[in-house]
Length: 432
Ligand SMILES: [Fe+2]
Image 1 (spheres, rainbow, N blue to C red):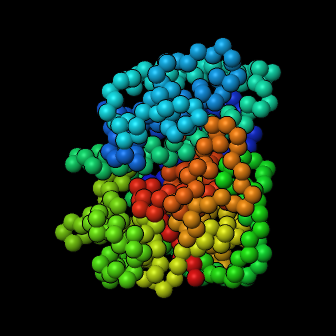
Image 2: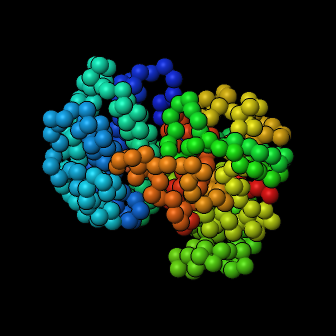
Image 3: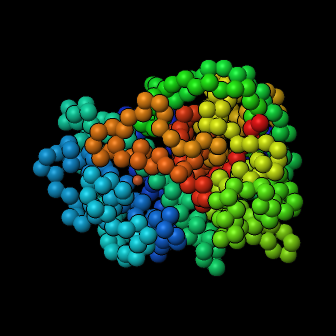
């Protein structure tokens, strides 16, 4: 059976039959479950400018519903607090000014208790709105859905951000205990095979049914030359060979910006890895443990993924190649998109000719810059700022990680981060 990332957290599986009200409550409660292991002091810490305190995440997602749903649905709506729009607006310039992101960890007020009251108050009003479908104008229903998808994005960020914060603490706190040690024999990864795809004019992007973000649209044709894709993500054991071969010290393997980052940051291994008595250890949400050679490699930047691929005589796939392969695998009945929530459906042993572990282990860096699809048009209004304005200097990641809520994962999903980012659950899959 393929070895998967051990840090998996279980969010409610999608049923497809839930009402919007049930989905709202399910997603909001899962955020609270993710907070359950934390102490009050954990909620307010910000360990770097890219990461946010948990308290900010749970307030910001609430502000999102308040601003884009309640204030629109109820003309007489009075905000919970007059300053929260300034504190918890992330980047919506059309809505107003924002408290500087790097300073989110400087605030001891509002308290965590006050933010819990804020969440409860907004939940009461949103569910009252959803209780009476006649109250909710048809054009506002998609906003509820965007709010839920947005909250799921922040659920993953809550985990990546608290992991980073805990990693900076010499006490190395544990977010949750580790699962029982896996059976090593059963945990060995499938042999890496190359899966071939013929050239052709292919369709990528989302045209429904079901939710998709604007950046996944419109569905369009691309010419994809013949390519081969690795049957599974790269493992830690395979990356250890790159390290042992001096990969971090060989400038010829790196993009110029990547090499500069290696020098500036002193990188010599993936984030959260450290050497102790000659053995590699990694910090996880379950504390420090030995690097598991069979696990998919995690917490590398685009620069490291690209350098590894060059060292290995291969390359990273484009996002079109990745999506074509994922569609092929789906048609072949190889997986359900959230396979980690249906272990019985996950492939066992080797399944030649089909890519494995596309969803729910690590986000896979692609070689594709995050750019608009042909014909992309950002929606009018503040929500048009959601995705489109970030289409510069970032790379696309595909698949979804062990920290991505299962109902948030889909084949056409385009995640994106700057090339030096590595605090997300990001790995790679080779192509050639
Ligand atoms: Fe957000």
